[in-house]
Image 1 (cartoon, rainbow, N blue to C red):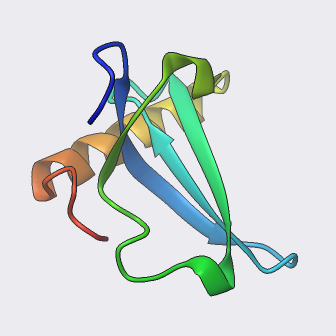
Image 2 (tube, rainbow, N blue to C red):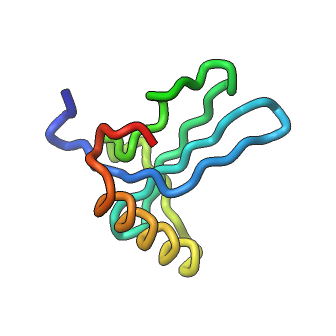
Length: 89
């Protein structure tokens, strides 16, 4: 169960790097704060990436670039409109 102080963030980006890690990025609806989760590719299953997460504000980083904030806000809105928070995507 989510803590009452937790912030809901929506999946806005996923990537794969040469260290065999999957990076999931979740942003606030305003796109101004980001939660980043890195997982070993071998540990990722169909239910790992959900449409939204509830995270502690302490785990959020600031998004300083205006264009990135706008892109994250647009994607967060799209995902929120199209999916329930627990949907695997």
